[in-house]
Image (cartoon, rainbow, N blue to C red; front, side):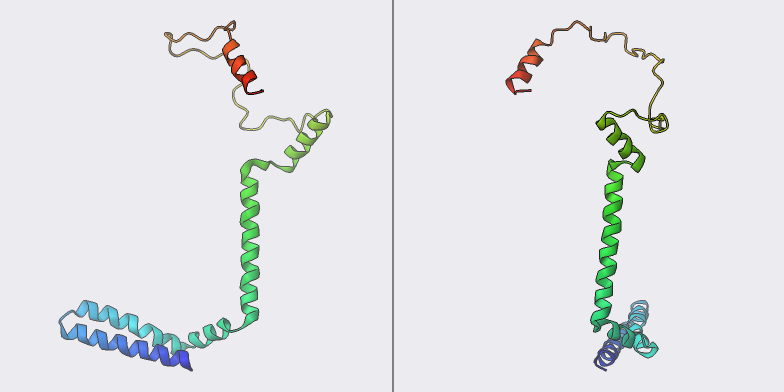
Length: 151
């Protein structure tokens, strides 16, 4: 009953503002305000306000909304964990076998789409001015830094 009264008052106030706007020769604005002000009374007359008021004050409805929110959070969390790269069940089993030292079956180690180029292809240097690093470089300074940090 209170909701219907409030909606009726809002509609009446909106229609009053629309009338003032029309008096000031702002007909487009007046029509838009009148359209907005007719929505609350339309909702009252169709019964939507009673339905919403019935839902808003039932604890069982709010418990249902809470359970739906928990389910949604679980779905989102599991999707995020799955996308972080945890891997599929086959990949996890293959990793567990490799950690135990068991032989990996050929089907489990089949190449995927992202394996890259075959090993037989050689890389060419597009910039001839840059020479590749020789294999006999001295890494003593890097080793000293690593030893300093205990690595």
